[in-house]
Image 1 (cartoon, rainbow, N blue to C red):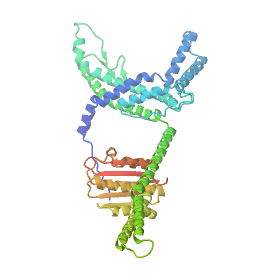
Image 2: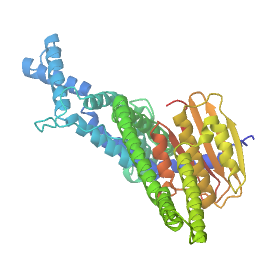
Image 3: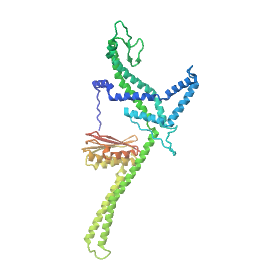
Length: 462
């Protein structure tokens, strides 16, 4: 079954409206505030600190005479190095990174997880120390942010300069009202390259102010896209340098997966204990009681006085034994369905055959997954089919299972009402936790009104 692909061309009028409205959107205001708020922190840059330290040492040592020597530069390197080590060791660098993350989250909507907290020493000390990787990544971010900050400053200049140019026709008459014979100097005009000097773009007449206004309008239309580009670059740096490192992320993910695996195993054991206690154990106890009463009716020897009652008790015991056997078989299937011994394709086919709603099944798995992955995929499919039948009011279901490289993709789709939400207690959050144990992922696409497609991505080997 092919997937229809639709293509459309953008409406030129919509593009033009978006370009004109871009300077006046809330998003631009937040991005502009981000650029302005980030400028002071750009001064806390290793390169800026180095230049300032060289100048201070030069002024103190030689009084500003001559040029800075190699000794001045070497001493500045030592001072800045010690300052950076102190900032990392005391946690000041971490606090600076935390401020940048909060700024990005509040103004750009870029939310980056914080690095793992510093572990306290046996003596209760909570300082990171000079080997703190998160602190040094903040220093690297500050160093990489210097050219980005210059571009952010340029973007702010485009916005301010464009507004000033756009206002030239408005104030020209008020400020250029002078007595006859007085000659005033031309007014410089902001351009994307700054304020030009003598002999360049300057305004000396009223018609010239409209040319300046046109330049200002062009700058205002270009400013949002420049601001968006530089804030996107800054957000990329924040994601890469101010979040947890790859090793820390992997360790945190493994710790979470281990905790989920332990919780899942404990929940499975509790469910088995409850099912055995409330089901098979009670039936076996009833069976033993019926057999005991039947033995009393039969007596130790001699003639049976109430053969009919004894037969009824034996029949009840037989029914109880069959029921207990059925429940035990159901428990066994809940632990590991025997149909999985033949492969995931046969197991999914048996699930599809047992549904009251028609199921379209398509399986293409060239390489068989490991037993643990097959078990997780089977129970995910069973849970998703049960949810669709119970909540979606669907008329048709579709199950797709495909192996792509080292990944097993299992999707269950329905043509129901949509609106599937893990927070509503439909078991989706539990499925997400189960697949996360093996580094899997569950994706939900269920807009209100449908259709719903839930995809489970699992590694083929675990």
